[in-house]
Image (cartoon, rainbow, N blue to C red; front, top):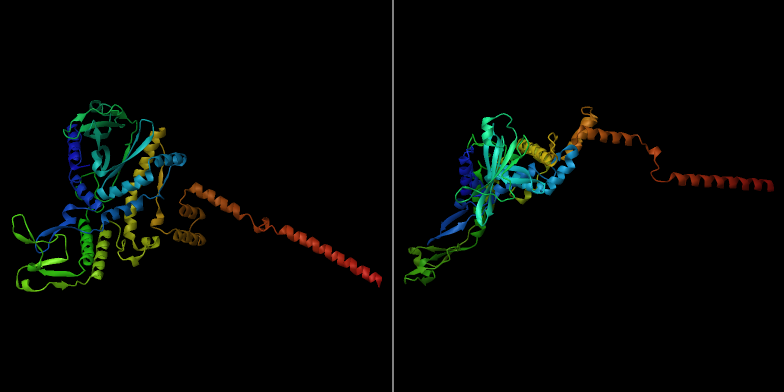
Length: 503
């Protein structure tokens, strides 16, 4: 959503006597979006002089802003994150699946870390289905907040009505159905209402909404039907703003450094081929419309460089061979990546530019990437709180349940090796320093009841010995062979007795 649309929305909300957040943070969202998309006009486009005229060039780029946000999304909300909701868990997972949550949720976290803020928004459609919307920063307009927590919020998006561009505004507010009644009777104003507004994009005036859209919806819920996501870092752009900042908001210089060194590295190979210094008198010429002759070269051609008309004018074209400084550039890129990784909370050594670096194992991550571990745990606090509130809102919309207990289990295999966890628990149990119950709970990532059932099964299996089981089916065969041997022995004895009598 463009800044002009954002200004229209803020002006409308202000006219409706809503308090809106400062636009200081919003003014940076467009810059963060440019870096996330990998094309910053005033940086990635530059000009170079080739001796005759200036040509426009595009800078090579690593695209590390998006890569960092992708990694944070994969660390926090991947396919192994489990939302536990008791008997409602199966139904909850079905609703999340219908909303493509595993894909869209991961994408929202990625965009949240890029633009600073994101939101889940829940509602029921005309058919009674529970819908989860995934809202990015430029569509979020806080209206009230308490101690940094956004309690009322508006969400804007563009629509086309009757061929004209309009702004759809969904306002989640707490209070009475009629705001004037709320001022007269402020008590019992804890329930949330949702207002659906349509605004003309040009004039900023309110217009009629489509017939299928209700202007006001009473949720009957004391909690908001939205959850705000943001990186768990302080907004140092505006300390009083409830909006978050991009995870790379304070790392723009490092992003520039990565692209500058990489651009130079790539140009080592582009310009490393032979170049020719051409005297201006030997250059091809063409007649311009005014009849004045001028050297004719492709402005994007970097092979030739025109020498001015000096002592070299009568000389021949000279060839220049450039050596490629690959090793120096690779070292520079690696240093730039290390600094960027540290500034964005990943710790140093997260990214390897050389192919021989390989992939770090989970054991290495937890042992020598303690910054990553701590920052991941810190950011997981906000994600877990949002997922719990989202699951409870879904349960309320679906069944009216107001007391659903929800827990979130994150994918700890990213930061802790599974085999290491098993080995540690085995040693602790053998040393008498941990119960088997606690060990099963940690290894299987389950609650106490599930661990007790597993322990009971293990005990029951331990009571069965090898003497009680016919593992090979060979006992019956051995009995048959034994009976046959006894019969043969008896027959031999009878034959021996008959021989004695004959004598």
